[in-house]
Length: 225
Image (cartoon, rainbow, N blue to C red; front, side):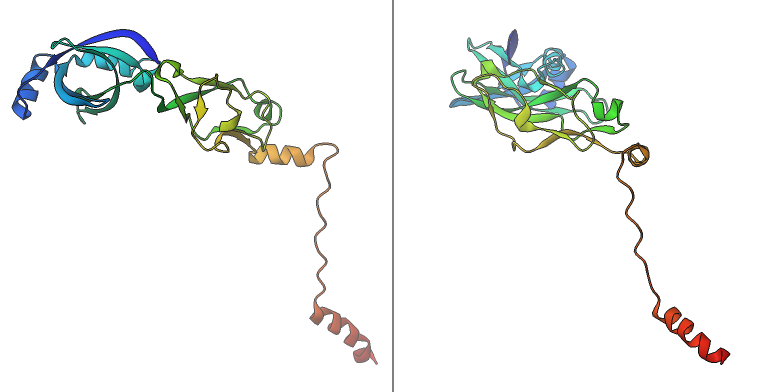
């Protein structure tokens, strides 16, 4: 999703670990801008501004303006980043130029709404199998998320990717039959269903006739004679 956000980036001439360390001390981090046929440009950006974008509702699907000190301003999105494994601070980020006239393939979160009847009335368990689906659309048409109503789901029923409502111009890339969420029976729910009035009677146990027992009973009268 395109946002009215502009991040300023300074073009950097020097590289290396020492330079990166100096930038972080100064409150900046190294980054690289590439894509759409242009040359890769090493830059520095504010980690606070990038983190604010990464933690927004649209996350990595956020398309924002990057203003370079060389005069270039271009729409970009975050495609990769690196955090310090101990401190959790942002160390480096990759930014890709975006052509607003060309479609992108992105992953969008799916949010479940409502309490399934299979849980509320039947005592089942609601499980989320996957929290996102992959779609293709123009950059300006990327949604922050999809919301699906799971109220009518009963035990044994599932919600699939093909059931997610999409606006015109958005195409599903994920497998249409991919299960997003479902309601499964718990042990208690299964016992309740068996004991419920009108439930099908349990199948009778098969009668087992032991051959040895039958021969023993047939031989008993002969012994009495």
